[in-house]
Length: 382
Image (tube, rainbow, N blue to C red; front, top):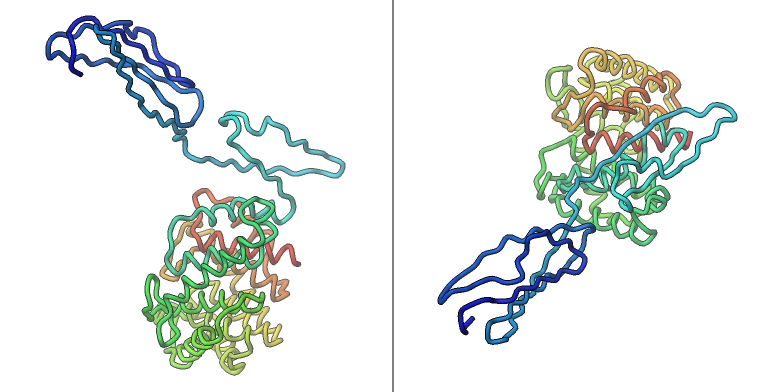
């Protein structure tokens, strides 16, 4: 400012903030002089605050400067899962003690029982809801559980009735923008070439259509025609060649749900190639396809093989085994549990599968969360 040099009066006001000690009441400025002050400021709550600095010159002129001070809580979100059993006649009281150690007013608690608790459905739903990325696999994984857990999403405050419809519609529209003229889907743009991804999106579309979601007929027919073509031209395979039949088994299952798979193909693969599939999930998917056609005997044999092989994988490699089909041992276990339960097959060890997928010692992938939710839904329905 222009004016006479000398002693300047200084006041600082900051409603809602705490200013440290040692702020001088006056400062001395010489001709063309400059002064810099460090003012300690602390906040008790988050919000947008104002700090007004007033300087009174020797001539009595008051100069005001208003500074905005945004205060934010930068603590990361944390979650805790506590599991316990209630015996006959036991009770549990939910009290504020569950929020000990958390910032007041920022926490929420969810209590679930039965299969919902065993597989921790609320955590899986929230994990998918907060997932930040949007490739075709991730979009499909986030949308699939909404077909079955709309009531759960509303209860958890994640969405209202109209929001769920909009979210499903938006996800469907985004997914269909990745479909090319052949009916195949690309990961980020219309670009075919991933048979497994085509089957996964086709699985979602057929489930959505069965649930009454408005799936465009042209897009749906193109997706199913593409799967039929890929199944028809699929090469012979062994466990370590041509993808081990992993995508083929998934494509057959999706087609079988709509009655579009050839029963002769299903029986051939069950009778001649059952041990050549590279993953337990592929065996279970072929079993599910046979169950759709009422061939429960062959279906049970496939599910028994899947149950045996998933137990072997879990004991040898642990749970964090990632593969080209977006899968892992944990994902396969959840999917086998879902498919076997829906197919009415009693040959899998449900309790062992639930133990395997219920408490991983790491974060989950979108596939693991989605199939964990589908497994929980099938247990509830069962």
